[in-house]
Image (tube, rainbow, N blue to C red; front, side):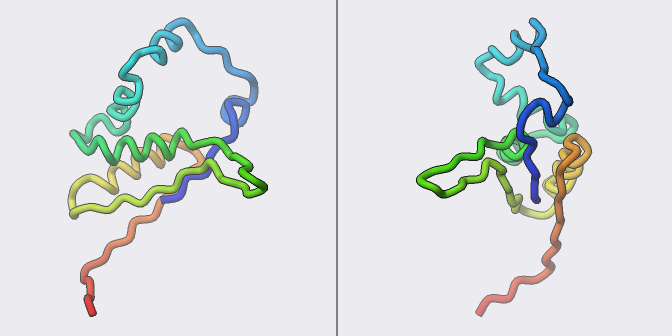
Length: 114
């Protein structure tokens, strides 16, 4: 899955965005990280680690320049797991949620070990 990060709120809204009092109350909660993770595909029970990974990819990071080396803030993730554990459904949910996402699903039917 590849997520392309947005640089700031102006990229999303086209103007500077002011938080409402209700939004400030929500973001000041101690369990905000868990609330946001659980809000991703709420119809899918569990899989909190997958949901947290998707949350990090959605939010992204900050581009930095460390000793002349550019460090990208975009977060790419790879979801791996047993079949039929809702990986594709989670990716599909996030793809509909964010406008600038791309994901690919690869199915492997056999592994060959040498």
